[in-house]
Image 1 (cartoon, helix red, strand yellow):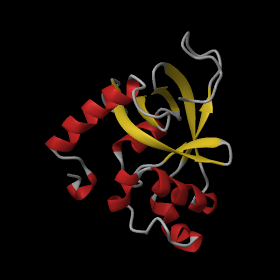
Image 2 (cartoon, helix red, strand yellow):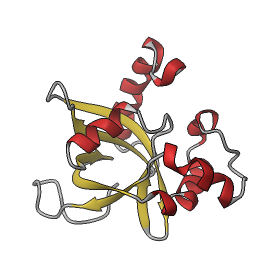
Image 3 (cartoon, one colour):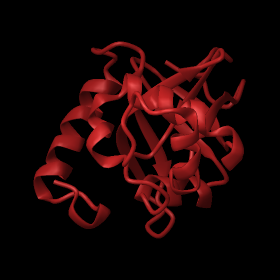
Length: 158
């Protein structure tokens, strides 16, 4: 469904469905909908994503890597996004340096099974194997933006 790193029509339909489900908060808190302003259209786009928790923080990782559409939109928006899981929270995504990504990528594959076919390392691989691909798979730490909207209360996302 993701030939060439872009979702086909079926993948896009499933993404819309899961974005609605995750936004409603009907799944565990790890499953969220990311909303970000499109870099070309200026319209809000929605992406259903799984988060990885690592050392007390939450992270988003693109299963399709560096050129993923939501990654380019987040970078263009200077990291400012809304994360929905039952309610909306304005957050800033802060890109993790390449040399710190390996354990986050490993945790992501352990917790988000749908990403496993897209990342060329087994979830049980050593950290050095994850470090070898870390430059191709960005990781973003989720930080709250207190007081940014009426729905935001300064808590961690989802």
